[in-house]
Image 1 (cartoon, rainbow, N blue to C red):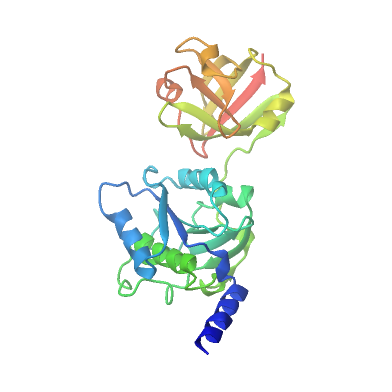
Image 2 (cartoon, rainbow, N blue to C red):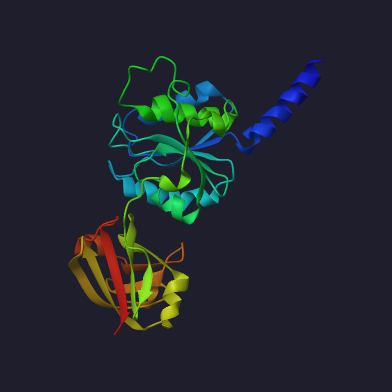
Length: 299
């Protein structure tokens, strides 16, 4: 009789969609590792189910930088197995009216996050098929009702762990919201018009100071440019011109002398600009984010 109950329960859970989760939870935040905040989130998750497998994207996102949180998700999520649950906590509006949500992507990944722009790039690249507002009357760590400033621990890590472990289904997260209405940050999309390639400086390759854009290789190749071709590269911050140079398109850094600029395709097959063995970002005070844009044209 006991075996029959277990089989029936398993079938019931599969029908509800619990089998989609794989007991993997991946965290990212702007907390840093100087204190116990990240450890507390993981402790809460393991308190839900000690068999969960916990990993990190990064906890070194600059404080309050929602754009970088959005970028790191887009950079990372596609490489994890379907069913993985991500927790992203960059939340300058904690305690405000911003919604706490869980979304499911078209690829079968789950993201638990404040709906404050963090989902901007994932919504465009992977697509969102389901979005639910977390019901904190159910999906909140016991005894945390009077805590208003650490939703990463009390709401997000707890909800993510319950979802990843199959304690709850996506339907039990909370109220269904329109998938198309996630909060989005505006930025320069990659375009090619009248011979001018435009895009956004999505992120900096922090270790080396290289400038990474959102311009994909296939769009760049429509310019029909061969190696060693010199291009005009212009960079703007909030529409204000900050950088202009002639830059050759090359396959590798060694194609130019040390300290000289080049344009290349990075490991994500996106257009990037750099100085060989020096920091372009530091030398010319270039940043990244939704307010940074780039133009590339033939000479």
